[in-house]
Structures are given as structure tokens and as C-alpha cells.
Length: 481
Ligand code: CS2
Image (cartoon, rainbow, N blue to C red; front, side, top):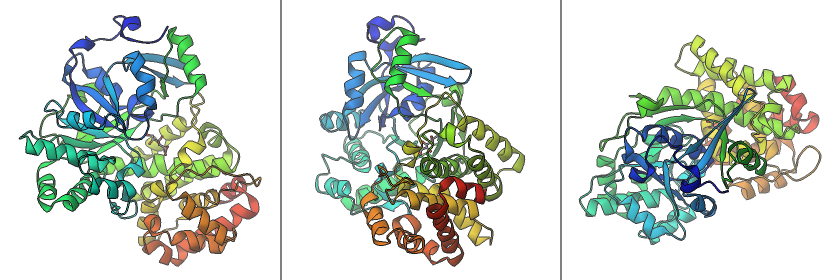
């Protein structure tokens, strides 16, 4: 039997028929469904005005999977001690932007919607990751400037929604980014206002003056769902669910409290509301995501399919421990004991044997991830005259990975918006470490212009890259640990 309102019975702690939409969420992937949607589900019994209308900007698969089950889905939380499952009912609908564009735009203009949240991944912001500004040449941005009432990008949709609300005298929604970008609220605000200004100076000024873009730090490890997960959920619940989500028990959400039109009482369901998310964000990006990215490339090249396997390798574990303790922690504003406890908790989370988190999944879109995960830390340390040995190995491992050929000579499926350009540079360098490092460092969307000019940094990366080619990832990690 398929999961649905009829087969679920009264398992939810609220009457779902009384829930009304208050949030539009762009990018309805596994992460959102395991994170924000679960927090919202916890508060609907107390306040039913915050149901979520999800939207997929690229593919219709989430809508197709969830519509036959009334947009209900199972959330499974797993660790070594076992699995807990619950059904989430906070998602009321999922719109496929390609076929339901007008309905999505109408929903953005609906006065009941007071928050538009996003998890569209780094590349969904159509920005230049090194500078955090709009990429005006991005094909989706070019499209949306030519067709402002039929936008395809996240900035285009948000601006269209805000424009219609303004025309109709409806207060603007708050825009809440839940992606792993640095200063994600500010960055989103800058990109959205810049896009709006290209439409009209007046619209840009209106948005800059009237729309809130609270920053958030979001954290939950959510691997892509597999068929084995679907089967396990069916066994646990006796119901078919076409797209359950599997995650860890841990979850964290820190939100900047700037919602002029009101917000749900997120603090009653475990989120932290603060004045400044900056320190939390930096800590998470540099410690968790910086380690993840480093492990993803070294682990993949070393033959480990999952993060839990990579972190069990003594060389990688020591390297990641050192990267956090010696190189990331000194750049962060929190005290050392607090950071040490955070690090130890991360090492446990990475080792969770019940999560099948693929190194290949994290390796995706490295060009968009490197700046905030490794390069910011590197910049801070270089400016203070401190060594960046382990961080530079993370960068070198990315360079080795984007050559598209693994240590056994087999192809790597490199997923990255810049994949073709990166591969071209690798081919031209014929995998010569020095030429490759110099060539990739000229990709200014990733490295800016300061890092390629830094001789120490360039030499350290080149040395690691030479070792990755000569000795392989695992031996190089051991030597750098
Ligand atoms: C991961 C993140 O895929 C990735 O790049 O590093 O998705 C990570 O699992 C989350 O940020 C954890 O909160």
C-alpha cells in the first residue's frame, strides 16, 4: 500500500486539512525535506499557518514521486543504534517550475506567504563564487532579464514575486537562504538586488530598502536516497514511499531573527534565533564542510565510496583532525574548548556507519564550494603568515579529481558547472603538477586574483599535487597529516 492521507490515518499530531501555506520553498531536495520541513512539521500543531509549498526549479521528479502520496513522506533517522522513522506532513504541494511556472509565480504573490526559503545549492544562485556577486552572463540570468515574467532562476523568481506583491500593495516576503554560502542572507540579498537593478533601478532600490534576507546556518547530513533506503522504509512502515529521506539524528539550525512580516516560533522546535549568524556559519563551513570537501576528493581518489570509510582510514582521519584543529579552529572567533567539542562531535558524525554518504556526492560542484569551505580559511591564514599545508592538500586533491581520471586510469564522472573548462585546463597541462596547478589557479571565479599570486600557496599546492600523481591520495594524506 502506498503512503497517503488515507493510509496514514491519524498519525500526525495536527489536522493537516487545517494547515494553510505560509512558506514557499525553492529547491525541494532531500536536504530541505530532512531539515527545515521537519522543524515546520513540529510546529504545525501549535500554529497551522506555516505549511510549505515546495518548488523544483529543474526537474519534475520530486513532484511525480510525492503527488500520488499527497506530498507526505517518511523521514528515517539512522545511526549505529538503529533507525527511527516519522512521517512529515508540512509539505502541502510541490510545484514543478517548468510546467507550473504561472502557478508558482501566483503563489509567490499570495499574501499568505510570508517567507520564501531556498536550498538551491551553491550553483543555483547564478553568482560568481569568488566575489559573491551576480553572474550577469549566466544563461538563466540572461533568459530572465529577457523574460522577466517567466523566470527560470531563483533570483528571477524571487524578484518577480516581489515585483507583483509591490504592484498589488502586498508586503514583501522575507527571503531565507538555507544553503552553505558565506553570509548566505547578505549574499542572497546582494544577488537579488543586483538582478532587480538590471530590470529597473527603482525595483532594485525598493528591494534593497524593504526586503529582509535573514542569514541561517543549517546542518544535517542527508545522503541521496537509494533504492535500498526505499526498501528499508517499506519494511519499517509497511507502506510504499516513492521518495523517503534518510538522515542522521543530529540537526542544527541557527537563524538570524529578521522577519518583518512575522515568522513561526522556530525557537520552540529546536532552532536558535540570534542577532548574528556569522560566527556559526563560519564555524560550520570551515570545520564541517571544509573537512567534507577534503575527505570527498582524497577519499574518492583513495577508493573509498563513503565518508564513513574515508574517516576510518587512519591517515585521512589524522589529516582531517589536524585540518580542523591546527588550521581551521585558530581562524574562528569561538573559544578553543567549544571548538574542540564541536570537532569531536563532527568526527563522530562522519563515522556514522548507518549513513551511506558518497564521497562522489560531496565532490560535486567543487568549483562552487571551495571558496567558502577552504579558500577563506587559507586567505586568513596566509594574511597572518601561518601555514596552510593541510588545507592546500584539500585544494590539490580537488585539482587531481577534476582531471577526470582516477588513480587506476578510469574516468571520473566530474559534476561541476565548470567541468568542461577544468578538464580542458587539465588536458592542456598533460597532468604535469606544476602546469596543472598554475592553470587551475587562473580560474578566477574560484581563486580570485590574490591566491594565484601567492607564491607560498602555489608552491604548497603544486607539491601536494605532484605527490598525488606520484604516490596516490592515501599516501599523500598520510604524509601531510
Ligand atoms: C556536503 C553538505 O554535499 C556536500 O557538499 O558537505 O551537504 C553537508 O552534508 C551538509 O552541509 C551538512 O549540514
